[in-house]
Length: 406
Image (cartoon, rainbow, N blue to C red):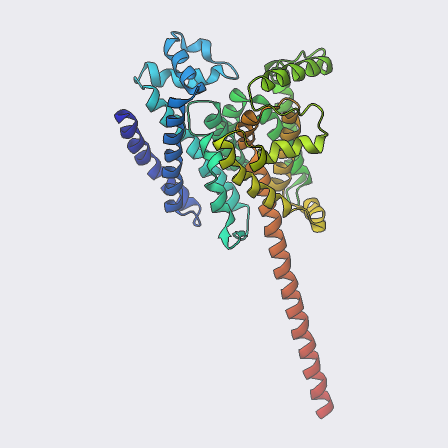
């Protein structure tokens, strides 16, 4: 464990100049806030490490398999094996032990939070409040989000990839390295996540309210379509389907996955649920009455927050807003809905649901706070219009009074 402690201190030192550059680029960034996220996330790295000592954990299997692997090139492929490719040089060339690999991946997950934070802040005008507390700050410290992104495994890698990718998409002309790196991680770990983001990006840029030259919109759409076509067959094969008989193989694989997940414990019989009930289960369960264990009870508090935040968009004016929303909001909505619907057909175990949904809940929260941001902007504009109208009426009254006196 001493090696892991030394590594954490080294990683903290490496992070400082990077965070300093981000602070110079974005004047509103508080390095102290990001450092708090660093130590908070490392704390959850310790929590997950402790959990792995007492429970079966995939992280140990990743380490053992990589340690026994002798040929690095054989591990470069999409899916689970890619984690071995990432871990191989650190284990074989630098002699990292299991503890050090856990916290190295925890550090990678930390950058996902950094870039999600930047994504939130630069796409909002105000700091939305939750009962007087800064909502974005609360989002950055949600326990479930940190727990599943603080270990050796796919969770930390895909979360970091999504963070880099959406930060890059906020300003694609100047952030090509972020887009490339994030796309690489997403594609290698979970191609369907990249597929959904590419579709969402195309929809967002075409329908977004930004005044972007039409040729740029078409370039983005063509890029999204081209990348989607490029990854389509690999995606279908990766998911275990037959590209030549997609519908039948999808039904068979969904039934098989449902059976596997039900046998894993904490099963939920979602096969008979309607789509709205499936989505509710995926987004908001477990709740306190059906939490499978102590971890489920703790997560129920977070799910209660999700329900509260989701209730904020159950308004008539939300439909008005979504029609005129910026590209990033529409992209986030498409990504969140599309991935949620696809996952509900194969998820039937609360433990798996808790882990998988951590990858996409920030998209839903961003849509909610962007809507709240728009509501506040609209109220300020209305107050300004009322004030201007009163001033104009008062000016006319004074002018008329002066005419009468003359």
